[in-house]
Length: 632
Image 1: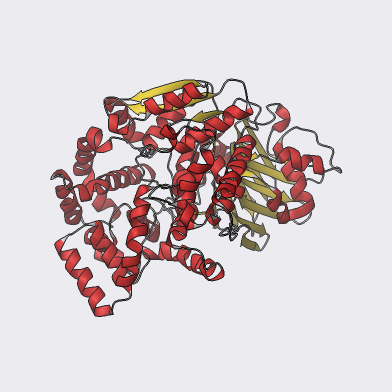
Image 2 (image 1 turned 135 degrees about the horizontal axis):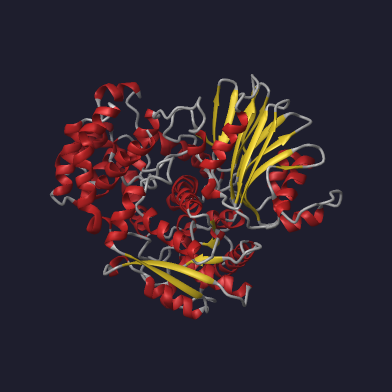
């Protein structure tokens, strides 16, 4: 796991101070790779590459990057190729000088080009320079586990694992992207290619871009989940297939030249990962959990301890106090140059720090299982509402609009009013993680002149981009239902832009690598193909996954009520956030020219009155003010 940087000349020569520029970019990513640093500059090729290394596979100096082969091809690589040994055994023509997965990847790319990507099982973002073709290839993995950002300006392509490194370059300015900001207010996260910075973009999951001396030669999504009709497969056979793939996926993610630990909440997903890790090794497995002092509603440590005893792990806990959260809160935006207003980042920061302090630099987690297998109980509510919602959207226009307007007037900021507003416009019901400001109230606190600049955007455009792709799938596979749409959006939108984004940033901020076996592409293909009747059955979310795990986990773990990885933010830091907003609101509104101060005051008033419909708004406004203060 590492940080990568680079500058590639498209229309002009490299800047005179290129060595300093690349080293400054590397310095911005020291946390991603504290073990080694590398720089390569070739003025004739117009190429400069930088690398920061966190040593996981081949700990020797031979794993140093940027790496060059005998044909003068170069690579900077961030991530892991879990099946690199299998690939290496198939390559007979190459005399390998290292035991690293990086060299195997470079050899495969040199001989097969982009078709090599189909053979990779791993998490990665890399830049590969083909010397003979004089082309630079940027690639991101299938699920979007590893980030890659880029800027094209003044005849130069600049790229990096994090935006903060790009901002060290004198020609890249920290200017906000208005469209991205508008959508962020709804989702608290940003879909590709947006980043909140004008002219800085991120590659989509499973996307590659090939650059040459004329600019972008090819830009393509190189993988999509493969759906299979499993309607005739029995429940037991399906459960067995899921278990077999998960076991292999966890085994792959044990590949490392350092010890591999796990984050353990005591829930189904993390417990399954630990159980399968124990099947792979009789050695020490270090597990970590976090709880909150005198906040039992947010604390799962008792369940984690049971799982730890069951599978004989070396378990360490962190008890987070009110003071811990209050002290850390002002720093929460430091790791997120691409903003993510997710309060769960707070406990993940502490558990990541705990792992590093205890000598663990690789951990496995249960991320992704809920999205793939419909594990959220509130998704059941959506699933129950869908038939009525479809009926509502089929009503005449004047009836839909009338009902929507009446509901908005009577129950301002209510989720019901928002759903009726979507239905009136015949939009999709399920928007994934749209937990922040409702579309029908967002414009109350945005300046009118600013709204005109973005042509009165509607954040449904973010969802609809995915919905249109799902519609194509649904025509091809008519057995796909509403719950399958929710899993599709969960995987394509929430997983890369929220869950994987926060794990990468918070893990790397503490110099640890986080691996997600549920997001192995073989598991993704199977999980998304699971018939909807097996995703939720008899009111049990994630039904088929739980059935598959009955052979390794007791019922008290599998079927206890899901708590979620939450934080007592309102209870412990509500006053702190409110004071920060009050103290900074006038300056914030004046400096940005985007927000209407009176509109924000109305929301703050409702928050102080204890209106629970506004709870997430408090966090969103606080985070946005703190983020602008740090990055803009």
